[in-house]
Image 1 (spheres, rainbow, N blue to C red):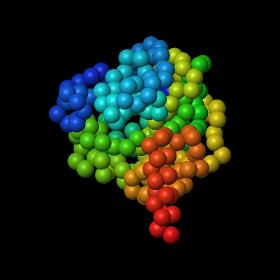
Image 2 (tube, rainbow, N blue to C red):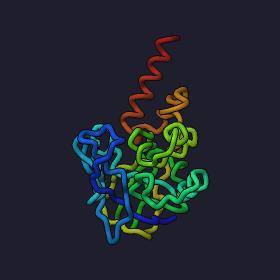
Image 3 (cartoon, helix red, strand yellow):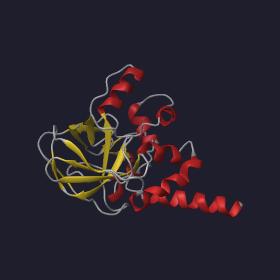
Length: 224
């Protein structure tokens, strides 16, 4: 398991985002040299966990529970075949492009050590948005990405550190429950009846997923 590239984006004005000022940092490119990764702080105030990486829409992105976004090169390769065009590392706005790692099968609360110091914890799946669709410029992209149910993972920073392209990735903790990134995604999008299953992940869940699951359980209980 390896980190192929570390990817960062700079602010860019575009027509396809609802973010204030029409600015987005979704266009990520591989960067040379070491990159410092730290906890960016609470959502709404903190952006990316990567030094030099822009998160422009702080209402919906960034913060401690979405400090880093990882996507597998294997899944990019699959989309290359479907879309019939090349997709460079960082093409989906991911900070980390990995290989040999089952990102979508990772469990919420699973911890990865990347390089000598950095430890990240899986928190949730990535939900496609209008900015993502505009960035890819593919018809019906949100629907197609949702149907594939291979969303990549958001992670929080447990132990800060520096990383660089080529660093090894090691799974240092794997929870005993079966709440995966893919399950979180399906429960949050097309299969809301799965929401109660997310509660098995406990406090490791992204707060928004936890609130959605508790709300669903309460609503179902009120019907009985």
